[in-house]
Structure formats: C-alpha cells, structure tokens
Length: 179
Image (cartoon, rainbow, N blue to C red; front, side, top):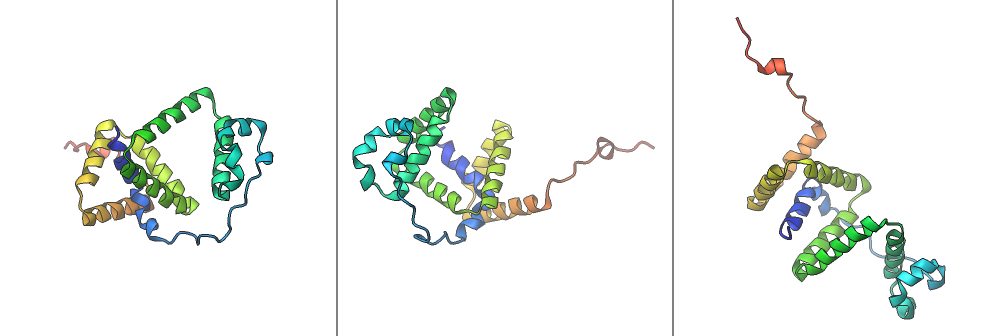
C-alpha cells in the first residue's frame, strides 16, 4: 500500500493539476497572530504539555497549527483517534523523500481556491467508489504515461467534468431491431 498512496494522491489531483501553476498567495500578506498559552483550554494544555516550556518561542503559525490540531483531536471519537494514529504511524514509516513529495502536494492543494479543492475532493470520492481493478488500471495508466500523455489525460478529464455526466443509452436503444 505504501506505493499506492503517492500514486493515488497524484491521480486524485489530476483534474486540478493546471491550477497548480497559479501563484500561491503572497507570503506575509497577513502574518498569523500568536496564540497565548493561557488562551488554550485546560484539555489542550494537557495534550500539548510537551510544548509548554517553549510555547512562546514557537512561530505563531506553528502555535496556531498545534492549537487547531489539539481542538480537532479532542473533538474526535476513539475510533477516529485510532485511525489518526494509524495514519501517523504510516506517515512516520515513509522515506523522507516520499514525505517531502506528499507534503509538497498537500501545500499545492491548500493553495487551490475552495472550488478547486472541492473538485479534487469530489474526484477523490469518485475514484474511491471505483472497483479495485479499475483503480489499479488507472494508476498504471498514469504511472506509464509520459508528460504529454498525462497532460492529455488531464485535459480529457477536465472536458468530461465540464460537460457533465454522459447520458446512458436506454436498454432498447442498444438492442437490434427485429423486422
């Protein structure tokens, strides 16, 4: 499965790939505000206790990320936490190059406008609904394609998305007519 994650992520971003060429918002346009340790709920402070001594020296963006992450964690059910632990364990087992590539893709995704993010998520859910054999075939097609072919695949997917779902022929239309 460790080889399918990057491939799957790449396939999911297929339809949004041209949007990656857009520039990200200017860094520092609105610098993040620091989060005061005292503003965290007691449960958050307990969860983040390993950062207590260095909290004020952390960059504000890191403080915000930790505060937000702790809120999310505290709001999860036990089952959700178990799944999150599994994903984190998997993440830690990845080679550094793979983690870097995935982190880069995530940052590109985060830079997308909300409508493009929604489109990527929609494509992900559609991909997940496909039978395993079809998902594997699509992964292999993408993996074996050269850059020109990949661009053609992206353009074809975009065209299909813009046209909407194709109407299916009725069962009677596919039957030969008797004379």
